[in-house]
Length: 252
Image (cartoon, rainbow, N blue to C red; front, side, top):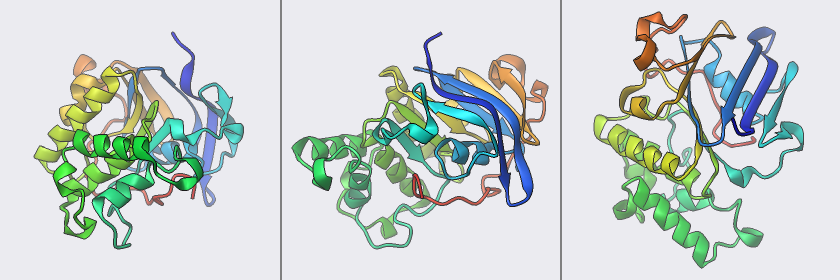
């Protein structure tokens, strides 16, 4: 196997005084698609937030692209899609403005040049939102908001996508667009770690499933399609709106 793009070793994390992750090991190799599954409260979203630095470690270590996370600074290589939220976070903005914000990590001196604007245009086309580029995000449906968030992550042309329940509460048409978009990224070699409450249209893309239960890894291996959904220890259906709270900034 190639060197992992994500490696967690003995990771523990607390929210307040409550232990949420209890010494988990998790790897994602280059070009691999790994689904993080588990019942509500099992620690899935906390694991994601720990990887990107929103939740501090109480023990263990995390590496991104072979570099300890504390020393990792090349965040343009990482695209992050938070749990479903409004794309603009309540700030008036157009679709293009939101997606362009995802390109700033690659822009010189914060100025979008021709290549940056082309990357934004491609990202909008990938998620089927090019025709809404000038529209206010306030005019979008929930599924369209999610497409914009994914386009924002894709605009930086990341090598690694980290996605927290990208399909939750999204209409079927948008789910199919997002599955096709993700498939195209995977075909180009993008590595993906995503939290899911059910596999849905993404099922054919999943290489490995990691199931959490009470902050511990209960299964790391074939996805449910190979072993049977009910055979996975600790995997229960989670309703789309049963989310752990999250802030939307990558390192906020």
